[in-house]
Structure formats: C-alpha cells, structure tokens
Length: 491
Image 1 (spheres, rainbow, N blue to C red):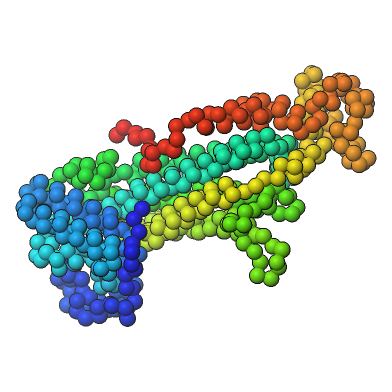
Image 2 (cartoon, rainbow, N blue to C red):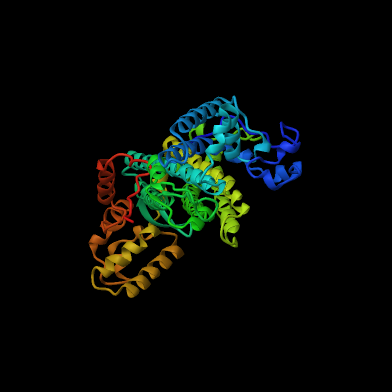
C-alpha cells in the first residue's frame, strides 16, 4: 500500500488560502463568495485522502489514455497530461509538492498542480468523470492493495503457528472450557485451532476482493456521461476484473469498505483470543510460556515485572477495529441515492482499519515466534486426574454401557475422589469395579494424559497422529498464496 511522504496543511493558519481562491475553480462558477475558512476546514478531506495520491495518478493516467483513444482529447494532449501527472507524482513522492487545505481533496490538488505545470491542457483531463466516480475508483484500488497486505500478514501468522506447533509437537497441556481444566490436549492442536480460524479469515478477504474488483470510473456524478467513452480500456489498464453496471450504485455505495472492515474485525477478534491465551499463559499462575525480552516490557516501579504488552495491545486494538466497522455502517445506513458527502467519512475508518489489522497481525506473528513454551509446566498442569473423567465414561461406553449411565457412574467416581482427596488415577481396577463391574485391569492403561491424547484419533481430534498428519499436510502444501489470489467467480 502506498503511503504519503508529507501531510497536507489542514489548519487555517498553515498555508490555507482564505481569499477568493478558496472558492474551488472546479465548481465555483456559480458562486460569488469564497468559501469561509471554517467551512473549508470542516469539509476538506486533503488531510487524510492525500494517502490516495498514487491511485489517483494511476486512475488519471488511464482516464487520459482512454479519452485519447476515443477521440475526446488529442494524442498530443494525452502525452502532455501523462508526463505532467508523472511529474506531479514524483513531486508528491519527494515532498516537493505539498497540497494545502484550499485544494479540498487529493483529486483537486493533483489537477491544480498538473494545470500549473502544463497549462490549459490539464483542464481537459476531467472530461467524462466526476470526483464521485474518481474517489471510489481510488478507494477500490487502495483496497485491492490493502487486501494483498492483509493476506500476507495472515500468511505470516499462520506460518508462526505452524512453526511453534512443529517445535513442540509432543507437548501436552490442559485444554480448557469455561477457563477450567477440561481434557489433556497437545499444544500444537491448540495452536492450529487459530490456524484454521485464520484460514476462514483469508476466505473472507478473498471474497471481499472479488466484490471490490469492479471499476466505477465512467459513472460520472451519478448518471454516466453523454461522451463516447470506453470503460473497458480503463478497467484493463487499472486491472479491474469488470465494470460497474449501474452508475448510481457505483458511486454511492461503500459496502466493499464495510466488508473489508467486517473481515478485519473478525480477524482482530481471532488475534485478540490468541493474545488472551498468551497473556494467561505468561502469568505465574499458568507459567506455560516465557516472554522474550524483545517482545515484552517492564514496570517503571516494580523491577521484577515482565509484561505481555504486545499481546495486551493486540486485544485492545480490537476495539478500534470494531469501531471502524460501526462507523462506516452508520454513515451508510440512511443515505438516499446517490452520492452524499457523508461518504467522505469512509476513508479514515478504512485507512485505520487496514493499518490496525495488518500491523497487529504481523506483530502477533513476531511475538509468537519469540515465545518459549515450558513443556514441564504444561505437562504438570495436565497431570490432573480429573481431566481423565471423560475417558473413564467412554471406556464404559465402549463396553456397552449407555453414555448417560456411564456419565453418572463416572460422576460418582469423581465425587468419591473429591471427598477423599485423590484422583481417579489413584484408584485401582478393583476400586473402580465397586462403581461398575465393567471396569477391568486394562483401565489403568487409559489413565494418563499421554494415553488420553493418543487415543483421540477421531477426525479433528488432538492425537499426535492427527497433529503430525496435519503438520505434514501444511508443510507440503504450496507456499504463501499469491496476495490477492481470490478465485474469480464468472460473471
């Protein structure tokens, strides 16, 4: 994703034109008075949409070439415009051209500078387009790059999860429900649960890409244009899969922005859950993981502290992701067709949503790779005999006892053990037979965490055999998929 080099002036005292020039020449013909400085400061978007300048340059070059190919402008004018736009882009890259608030937005800033450089020929560029279709084209191009960056970040975190699962392939830990120890599992099985969540996140972003990959340019302000244009030329040059079929819909909806932010919110929720696990595991109460110095912080008052700030901030930033989605949905919910200036509010939410999702996901990947897991501490926590209660019940089921009856029998065993300060593993086969005559000597073979894990070979279960097969599948599959590699649905 492109980022700007320098910020635009956004205050009335920072390079803002307050004279008649503040009446924008792109629309000021029917106005006699300049725009009030406070109104200009409130309505101008140049302070944030300057981030779109690389896309606006691309869009404008493609538009100029199309205008020439259809005879609306001459080839000579096209060449002059294209050279001028590339010069403007270089100035923006280097910070030599800094738009001001009187430009209102990045589109008019570029057009102003272009006209300053090449004269009246620059005024020909805006034929057959409006800022309405121009901005949504820029945003769609930005979003396509943003999705590619997000998919790359997801690849990175998935890779980190696989690496740690491979490094600790035999590590046993307690699995939890209701934050209570439930059954023994493998650490790798726990980590790959997040891998699968991220795979669904990947699918959501790929679906979003498919729907974002539509060219709006050529829709004009809302009704198209009377000029003979060729939108297919522009779509091909800009890399869009297809052309929008309804001009009003094309310029007035931002559902593709909301869809990205929705997918980002779910991605962040998954990251927040992983961060929550890491935070718990790093506590003295759990002691399952040791934080690397490079990915933790200390206390300004308590010298002994080593805090999981990266994980905590990953959880905290999830609230921003949710807020960005709700902000855009609220902007959209009551807008009459077609374009309304409310839609200007989509960009800050989108930019922040992209930055937050990508940065959080990549930082979580780095944090995860830096962790050292304490296998002995995890194994000790899993060596809680009550975690094997379900194994006892299923032992009876395998010998013909109805599950509900087996559940009740095992519950009685648990109660007995609780009252006597022991665990089911402390009971002999003879002791267990007092609760049910289906218990035999071989019951002792199932009453270890290792046996509990190894026997869960059902598809999707936590057994070592399943984990190794899954890791082999992931390690032999193709490398990171091409960013933006959504499968296209035929239209």
